[in-house]
Image (cartoon, rainbow, N blue to C red):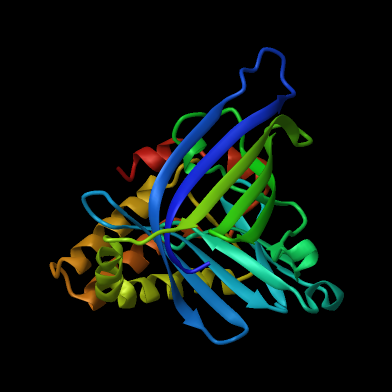
Length: 290
C-alpha cells in the first residue's frame, strides 16, 4: 500500500430512504505519495501526502496494529472512544485506525486479512465514522456514516471499497438517510513529483511526530471529543499552516510543536457527554475562534 499513486475517488449514492431526496455522486482524482513512517513488525503507519498542486499537502494517515488490545472508534458528535478488543476478535487480526490531515482521529476497526480466491483483502464489520470532507463542507442533513471499509490488493496497486450508510442522529434512534458506494482506486505510477512530498516530510516529520503525541495522550484517556462540530477547520487549518512554515524554515520545530499542541488542547475535551449534547453544541464555538 506504500508507493506513488494516481488515485480516483468515486462515490455514488444508490438508495434513498427519504421522500424527495435526490441522489448525489462525486468523482475526483489526486496524486498521492504514501510512505511508511513507522514499521515495528506488529505496527505499521502509512502517511499519505498529496502532490501536484502549488504545495504538497499532508493528507490522511492509516495505522495498522496486529492483534490489538484496543481500537479507537468514532461515537458521533466529533467524539471517540477506545474500546477493548476481546481476545477472540483480535487473534490473527489487524486494526486499522484512520487519521485526518491534522492527525486527529477519524475511525477504526478490526479484522483479519484474508487471501481467498487469489485476493488479499481486509474487511471489518461496520463502524461509525465522521462525515467526509466532501460532504462536511457542502451539506448538513446527516451526522455520521455507518461504514464497511474493504481494502484489497490489486495488480495495479490497491483499492478501498466502501459501503456507506449515512445516518441522521438528531432523533431517539439513528435514521438512515441514504446509502452510498465508494471506490477509491490507487494505481501505481512513475511520479516526477514524489520528491516534493519526500522533501516536505523530511522537513516536517519531527513536527508531525510532536502533533501525534498530543493526540495520543487523548486516545490514552479512553474517550475524548472536539469542542467544534461539523468540519473542524479551526483545528486543522492552523496546524497545517504551522507545518508549512516549518517546511519553509520560517519557524523552529520546537516552537511549532508547542503552538500545535496548544491548538489541540484548546479544541479538545475529555468530557464528551451524551450524543445529544454533542450534536447540540452551538455554532458560536466555531465562530469565536475564527
